Amino acid sequence: MGKDNLIFLEIIEWFDETGRELVHRIPEKGSGEIKFGAQLTVRESQAAVFFYQGKAVEAFGPGRHTLKTANIPILTKIASLPWAMNSPLRAEVYLVNLKVFTNLKWGTRDPVAFKDSELGLIRLRAFGVFNLQVVQPVLFINSLVGTQGMFTTEEVEDYLNKVIVSRFNDYMGHTIDSILNLPSKYDELSDALQKRLQQDFSHFGLALTHIYVNAITPPPEVQQAIDDRARMGVFQDMNKLMQMKAAMAMEKAAGAEGGAANGMGMGMGFMMPAMFAQYFTGAKAGEGPSQEPAFCPECRSAVAANARFCPQCGHQQVVFQQCPKCGKNLAPGARFCSRCGQAATEKPKPAICAQCGAENLPESLYCNECGEKLGS
Image 1 (cartoon, rainbow, N blue to C red):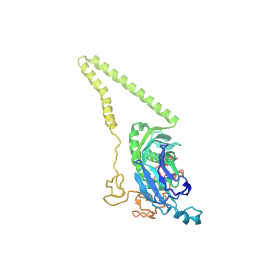
Image 2: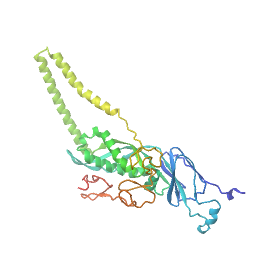
Image 3: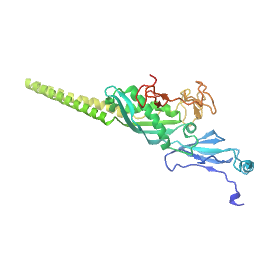
Image 4: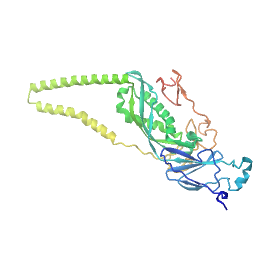
């Protein structure tokens, strides 16, 4: 029997040679006739989602799995005669990379508007890096990937960058009064951004493991004003220093008996600010990023990383879709959310600025174009 007349079963596996692919579909173009009994091999750092007749029917963890379809060798070819020997029972496998993707860039393409309490309306540029990981493969494919054959970090960075910049602008407008006080709050800004963005990323089945703010820069004219302000502060400090030295000279001239004690007191006065600065800086430097355990989104009980259902309330942990309003995990094919009644297919509306008419991401607090508070 010739090789061309044999019917072979598929062996499905994937190796990411680029190190930048989040998802890879097999077959890469269109869909295929995956036969009954095809063998799927999933690595430790991967997860697989099996789509059959247009629907996600199963998610697989590491190991070797047997795929079951109605495409039976030889019989399927005979039954496919009306469709030009192409079986209508289409199937594809999406293999998802579960590793942590590091050093992804975020930043403002166009400066965002910020109302400074001392400098007035200014425009800021900001940039940094972030790390992400796919934690809900089915939700990630259904919400972001769609029917693309390959989906890389470069393709997801563009959209997530808009989300990060929008939340950055909200935080700045809500908590920072002036950029003059900003350099000391970079760590606080990174922590607050990460907590706020966790919710946004979870709607796509992603986890934001870390985010860092590298720099926030105002326009050149604003930088010049800040430099001028700093020079004035130096001159004031120099004036205070000269006054202090004059007072010390007068005290020393008044009597040599208490001079040594006064000198020691002044030395302690110089040392105290440095001691307190070292104390507070050391306390903060010792803090590391906390690794939070996985929790059920319904009852908040701790669950294992690979659990399919919550051991306490039975809520499914493999998410096929989420409610766009309240974030509840929805059952496959659900048309409405059982918690809030929101239509499962309805997309949240963008926030329109009443001042300039610009479109912003849903739930944004401040406009990226003019800096005005939305909804006011």
